[in-house]
Length: 339
Image (cartoon, rainbow, N blue to C red; front, side):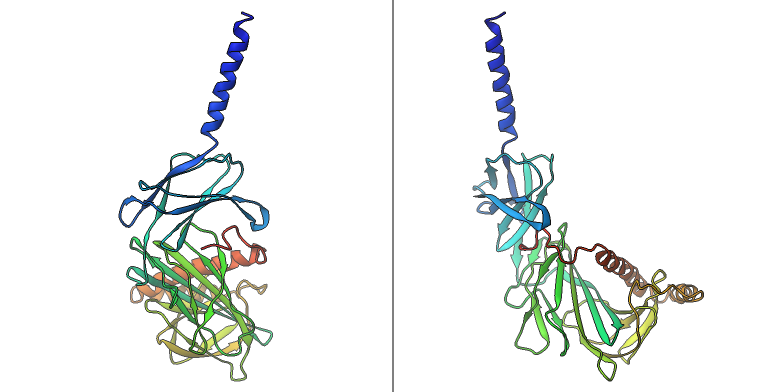
């Protein structure tokens, strides 16, 4: 028995070592979802994630002709796999304890043509507060195809920022299955027009643009829609009234009592009266909510598409409220430096 003990110990240690080796690698294959085939030549980088949005590169490899890759690193904690293909980044989170072997990473071919990538909703929230007009725009892209829309030269989205806006607009983008990232809207040769260079992958991508400007003496806010698709809605919080030839009220959001207007022209001007803030401290009036619900219900059969758009607006309004309450405006998420 004494002679067998060292041999058993060595065998046990060998089994442990082989088991550790099996867990000490990140491997798998990259599949091109446009062609349905393995994608060779894709560049993959493993990042270790730390607090406060820190990312530390661990190792970079390239897929072989069969789309396979292997990173011989022992990992613990949260990590990110970032794949570059056709100048577009695709991210895959590796949560602590998740499998690291036999992974399947998806990429897509890219085109500078929008094709199946269309704007499905555009919301403009106007909040007059203390002689300052706060503007929050949310543009939602739906890419129903299997090709990434990527146009660095012209931008995948163009926005209009009026003269007088203070500082740079704040731009936050949420890609499919991704976290919000900060980007910049680049100026173009056309005054007031900015382009956003960010790939629109298959799925839903949301662009959130925020800026402020002094309330004009005329109380007129002028905007321009630079994309096709829609619909486009303007939202005014409780206590604020908008009037203009290019807009028409379609109802009130029941929870916040915000008024929703349909925009019926690519260029519009609205007269802003009153002050208000979405989710402000003021409580709802006793009769306001019921009136808003009745207004929507009375039009549900004749304006079904407008009401469907209103339902999406409710989700977007909820996102804005949650984003403000999160208290993380100054933090940079792990994906903040990458697409």
